[in-house]
Length: 375
Image 1 (tube, rainbow, N blue to C red):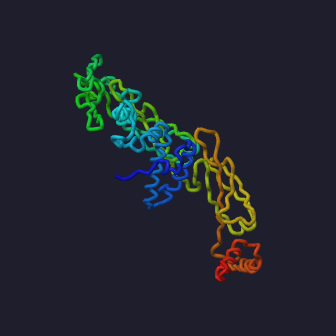
Image 2 (cartoon, one colour):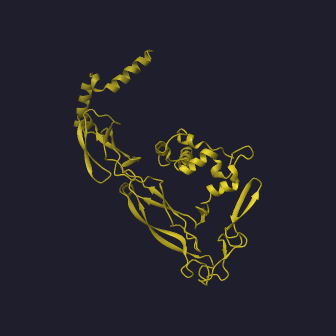
Image 3 (cartoon, helix red, strand yellow):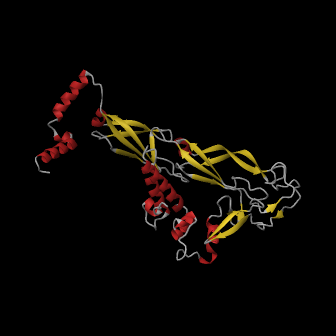
């Protein structure tokens, strides 16, 4: 069995890190190991999966508390056996009930519910910035209109409590240290028996149907965000509340901007003469506007210019991050005869002036010292 790495070690945070520290660490690592930034790199892909798995647990207070107490066993259904964890008076069966009650449409606050549903929604970079409402079609099970969800052809008939599970909808059997729960084979998990089942739903209380739901995706949402819509999952039928719908949001990459949390980065090419003499350039902003940036004389490739408040939306806030312009000095190609003559003249004049090119002068001075054995 593969050994799992400690979730805190995966995110490179201490065990007493707060929620903001965990979120910042996740953003940094997810950006670094994202598959789009590491195409074909299997190690980076596996690392990215570990990072998401760790963050999914540590960002949730309840999951984190369970992990701090029981480690990975809290989510794998296992324990060290005798001499291991102290589960208190309830035993393993109660621990499973508390931790995994929501699995397979289990219980919520002691009540059964319909199955949860998951859908994937892809939005554009601009939609993630401004927020958007998306209509999605969800294939699901809804309450049968013929029997009003009772499952019985006779709407006035009261369902009988299942004699096998006594209304619980599941049966429990002990296997060694562990308790195994399964849906009741008599009532198929409903907890009741229908003597005269509805012909439309065959006694289940639900029928298959496509539903269209409008989902409000807030501004500032990040790639991989999960939105929970309570009560929009599958209907439980027979008076059982519906499950929840989980919408997984995928944000498309942008052709110009790269995002890191609420900050945006934009690489802007500048001609060599512009960088040497200084200039003013106009750049796009993510909100669709434009702004001007002053490029001082002597600007080098890689230099950044910060535009405050021009970045991405911050989730559930009116604030915005910053925008960073990264300059890339472009060397001209296919020179005309006159341009070549001017550059050759410039190079001849610049060769004797160390102050004009301090980096190259300093570098080749060190190279000379290296070959002379001084370094």
